[in-house]
Length: 406
Image (tube, rainbow, N blue to C red; front, side, top):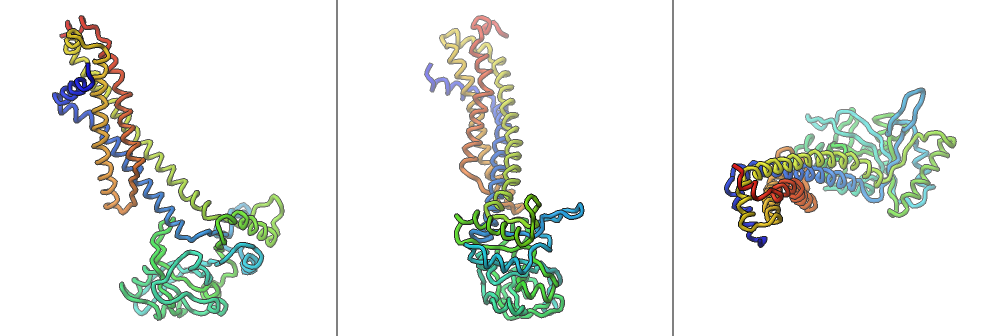
């Protein structure tokens, strides 16, 4: 029998039981939609994390204070105490291949301007910080090396903090803010950055010369971290080794003892930040894939019922000349049609659903062609795998017994 005739017979059988056909496809539709939605959300989250890490700048290395245990207690990354001013000078002077360096200290406190106040992130940084982070200014200018040496009371302000203190669409440059009753003049208005990897608003920030923050606000004598920028990506591993060896010597860390600092490259930061996202994305996709299997089981169940109901019809077809392979192809085409049609509807539902979730909760969504092809291909495979046994069972019916079946 010609394949086109078999397809027409299979389509006619599906149309005869429209409600059953729709309910059978529902499992596949839900499964495919779930796969596409979860993978799209996972891809969007991964892309957002990568973009946020890229916003750190190019060829960046982070030197973090801490990572040491004392008296049974373990101090985490960024703990104060291990990175000193002399370490900053030594890294700048002795490590080859570094084009810019900026330390970082953190301060806290209320920031006031007139009758408005805010509690932003307050960071003390070097004058190279904006260049390292590729962070532009909307207006004004960066503070200078002279400002850093003299611990001048100047500041850069982020958009969120500026809008809180001065209102939207207002240029804050030239205004005075008070941090712990210490007046600082705003010299630069930072271009918006958005959220960072930790989900914090990068624009809710005040940047000060690190000397000003240490002398006037915190009283610290050590840094939370030091950010360095390499001249090129190819020399980053060598610079990491140079910095690590230099700090071990300066901190008199004996061989075999744990470092009181850690040096991380941008690539390592990216891998660490995306590993959890990848794991969650794969887990969600696997859970969604279970829906496809459940949908396939539904197809097998309905097809087995269909074989039983149409036993006499199968016997008549065989009696007039249909061969076993014709019967097999008929039922297999019915199963594949159910899964492919359900997969097509599932793709549409998945894309619409992921966009609705994105609009409702503000989550990033990235629907890739690979995920669509994977979901569609999986639905077709499910149709073949779970439709093969009912089709094989139908093809092996004895024509005489089938004609006698009531």
